[in-house]
Length: 323
DNA sequence: AATCTTTGCAACCGCACAGTT
DNA sequence: TAACTGTGCGGTTGCAAAGAT
Image (cartoon, rainbow, N blue to C red; front, side, top):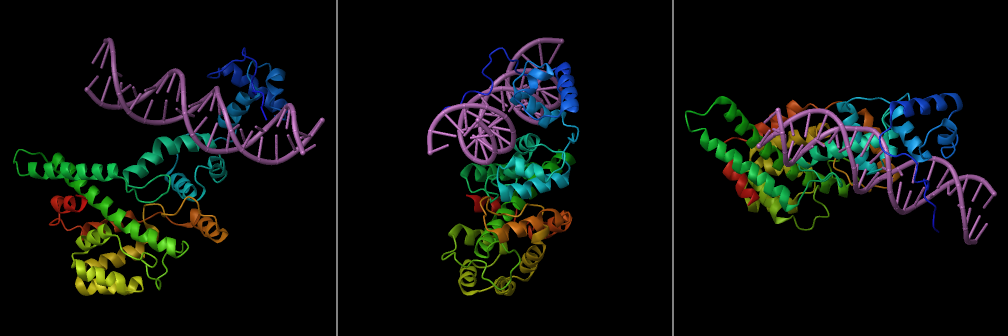
């Protein structure tokens, strides 16, 4: 079936709206409402197509539109909703009074999307990125940090440069470790139908063989023997057991793992869930989760990471993991 | 100060769908 | 049931402002 274009009159104006046009549109809608967008422009004295008028009204002129920067709370809600709904901007907009789908879409594309990518999260799937480019960029970040650290030996270096390099090293480490834990967490999530925090289920159940790279990274992260970790991986049936095993191997590190486990609901990162969850129970749970949680205590988490990331295991060590 | 590049956002385009004839 | 119409939605574009060189 072929449709006729909505605006078949080539003389109709396009492009930015003038204040005069805005005034005409607002006046007309205030007086008569907006029953029929096709006939509205003519009766309002506007040389525009109805579609253009509707867009201008819904995205800009509507009196209940909230303008200005998005708050952190709004940003968090958008990320959570996007992880459940995907690019359903109009549905997401219904949860944010005063915000339009167009505004949210723009905010996502220009702001949140970039943030997630920088954090190593795929903005489409909300899962850790595994593409080579991302790993390369992290590798480069580490190299830069290393270069900066070597410069620190020069007495002429200033404090600001030192701080910058230290921060970039920490950032790279944190991102790597978060990626690792998110992979583990994703496995848990996938195998538990999305119920976080279930303790009596093997976090790696269903993963017949642990990916070699994951085990290697985990061993390096926890400072325990590769073979010992492999054995634990295959023999443990719960997160508690796994943590207990790690504890036997390395007391300090396991405490930090436990800490992460307890704190994971408060993580600053959005929950890593598939964009295509369809079960009603999951949606219900997500719905309850969307607006109810309190702001994360990021300082606690970063303290834990920093404790875990002993500086003795610095740049070259992490670079080895990447390479 | 001039030019180039990047960013943010308003607006457009085309498709899909529901309702009507 | 097919043809048509109006509306909503998501992707994309174009442009002005801001920032970098």
